[in-house]
Image (cartoon, rainbow, N blue to C red; front, side, top):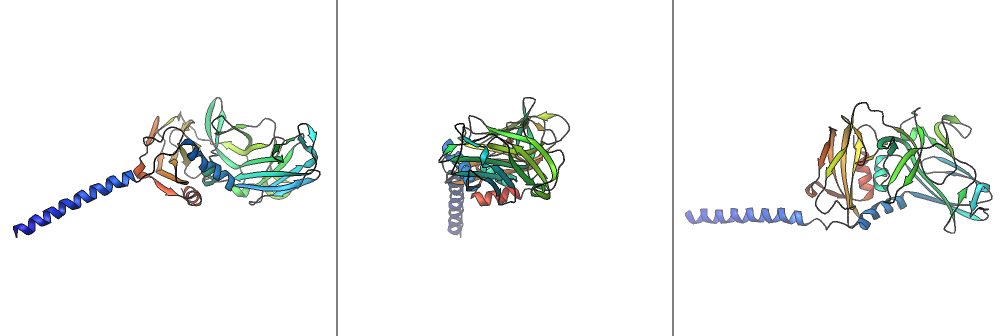
Length: 311
């Protein structure tokens, strides 16, 4: 009887040792932190997967209808290459982004600059339009037309405005209100549907946007990420409850009291390794800490669905 108890005791001790080793093994099973290039390749792939292309004759007026029903009209006679008129076929690149799932996998958040500060926007659609010929950049000497159905982002919001997007030296996108775009809301000669319509003449990023109207004081967000993941090989994003067409990052000022998810994103073997903090009201000098034990892996398609499902 005593011998049996000793055997059970030994077996129990072995079981505890095994559990302890398994736990340590799980900690060690995470891949090494990615390089900055490996991490940012996720967003390059995301952009490629969201890019629509088409060729057209530069001597014609080209009308393009996107996969989501946005209309783009470019007068080929307005295209220039090194100052000269263009003939022959040219190539369109077009990207449309409406929800935060697509925003996060392309790294195209809705942060706008106002009074020297980065503030959160909500979007009626982010767009990239570019035209090249044999890989050479073309320019426009007159406006192109973009018509965006408001139904794609939950209906008409009459305080939407046009924003131009610029990519900084680190490859990050920031929006500023456009001073040169003709912009109107409602029906037009091109559609009877409620739309945001823009006339503008610069290839690159354009957004129908408005600053999120939330009263009260603003604060910065501090995030602590796992060791080895703070050198440009991970990002932390912010998603706001009930605003599916908005995505922030932690570089901005946020309203105290705003219910927010915080999303840690890095890369592992070509997939998104991520963690999502439950929605929480932002406090003054808000701080969020992430650990690798919270993270999971997802493909791009899976990750888009997960982010879009946040309520």
